[in-house]
Image (cartoon, rainbow, N blue to C red; front, top):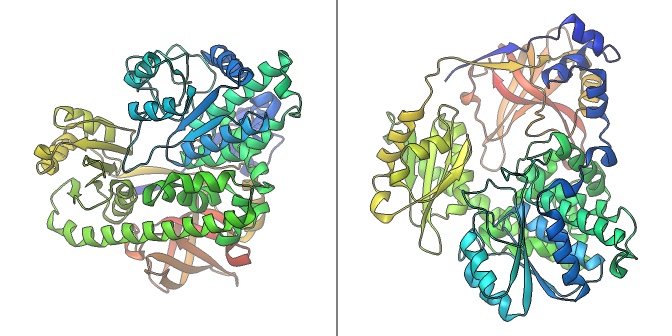
Length: 573
């Protein structure tokens, strides 16, 4: 599907007047984000924790939750924190671990299910395990909103449950002591975009406020506002889970990055040292592309406990050992994903007429298939669905879309042939029975055709033309718009009429593209890079000596201690 890149509509004179305290370039970028008044712009540029953080007691059931937890702390009950095994869930578990350690309540257990042998969800058998350990209260984070049967089972065994989650509820809310989730239909909390760790943070915020108002003895030695030191974990989780960086999330991540840059966690320091990241300059990209993948590799390739311990250990030597383990797991993960992609690239040309690429192998690890599918979408421009077999024996699959069909709607169109499924517009997962797995290509092809949009040339908006001779000032302006992410994407520029000096593939597998370009009449060259893209994948394949327009973002690279501005290629036209 071809794309046509056009400049975004510029603000009207009346809007420019309202934004007149800013230069024209800044006005254009603000307008592209729906910001049309000076007050809105000032709020956007200057996140203020005390002003932007909503009252945690606005969340339904929060008062019930903190009353029950405060009572458990008073009585020194054994509490369990049950969290998901991804970067969001692991961070939430670490956050709860630190918050309860700080108040001196040491009778708690962190439990993270094993991705392969236990699978996603809040499981009855774990209730049995925890109950045998004397646990009387289970608090979930990033999981549990649809696990009504497990909550009922725990209740029958005399174990209280508090659910904190951020996933969309099912038709029935679990009958727990409290169910805290901004996605509840009866909840009118101002922001529905909190991560699982974000919801857990609001729980701690409320618990500490409640304890101070009640003058509980166990909160007396905790400095006012100490919980802000937990925002490093909220930032990691929010970025890793690709939650929109708007409203309260923007403030939480802004301050979370500040905490992360001076975090005293030995695990963060050891991770930065291993990855050659300068901690005081850590960015959202460092989380998304370096830190979060290694946390996720812990559960994809081994045990989530490795990453959890890394985030909670106070032992510098142990932190270094754990980072080495995670790096080994991540390298193993990258190797396995690369092997799957190579194997698939040999098979895919066999199905040129298919709208959806559907391939599977019972020997493939389902935890890695979303990563492989994403690579294949970039390479082939088609929706890709891959399946493998879990350690439990279940057939699970992951899909990544090319934009022509809403993935969940595609699943819904053939729901009678699938087991569980979920996700969102561009990505999703599903399960399927052994009886139907061999028919999966035709099943998903039929679902795709039912919901696919008829698209010709796609129109993509660029924010502005890039001032090639003024990159430093442009980048200085862009830093005011950080942190970037879902809901606040990096501005996309048209860098017109640049001359291609050289082209090369780089990386261990030569799967990244570097192009050195220069503007006519200017001596300086600029490096333009595209990761996991071949030169032939662009709309217009670049050739040495040819003049092109690069669609790009502007990045400050600090790789290997060398700082330079470079273009990150979106497309070449």
